[in-house]
Amino acid sequence: MARVVNLSVNVNKVATLRNSRGGREPNLLDAVAVCVAAGVPGITVHPRADRRHITPDDVRAIARLLQERAPAVEFNIEGDPRPELLDLVDEVRPAQCTLVPVVPGEVTSQAGWQAGGDTDRIPETIARLHAAGVRVSLFVDAQAEAVQWAASTGADRIELYTEPFARAWDAGRDAARHSFGVFADAARLAHSRGLGVNAGHDLDLANLALFRELPHLDEVSIGHAIMSRALFQGLATVVREYLQVLGGV
Image 1 (cartoon, rainbow, N blue to C red):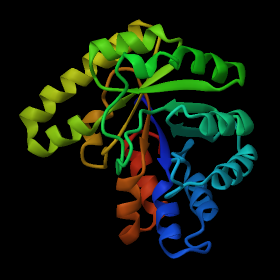
Image 2 (cartoon, one colour):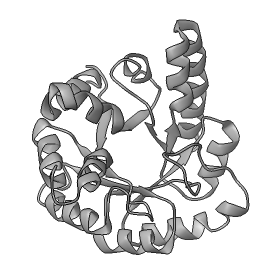
Image 3 (cartoon, rainbow, N blue to C red):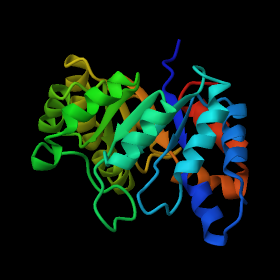
Image 4 (cartoon, rainbow, N blue to C red):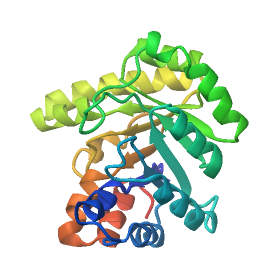
């Protein structure tokens, strides 16, 4: 029987489109409901401090909607460990919180955590989230040092930052295979240290054909590629395409 990798659909882009016009359309909860009806086991949001897409009220509304489907559909909240975000996670108690470093002014995430001054309070933050019953994943690069650091913090999982793999895939078969090897080594190391393995950033239907074979891969979080294709194919159709690639249909 083929291994199934869980898919968590990031719905940020639906909120971005809504916010560009104001009002309620496209309706974010409708998008979540379509994804759930299509069979996804997870929904992801990244509420940023500038509220340019997902807002705290969105997070609360999605949490209420998914409570009716828990634990079949997990809620994953991404973000930097600022007080506002941690208070929101304490309030809604998602299944998972993925801690992501944020650079002021960035369009999207650019790199994973690196051990240093900015990460001194990560173990304390993880302990707080564990006390709330929340699984914690750390967004890291596919580097041994980053994985070893993540294992030292008390985190449950890592999320591998996969843009380097996506760029290697675009460069051709040999580059993709080499990059995949780097990510596979990181995943094996994480597993050996007791960490679960998630992944996300620029994964799509094409490069998942290889990346889905990553050792010990638990979950992929995908938003931009799904929503971009859904403009032309329909959200439910595209979600089912991804589930099929990942072995879930």
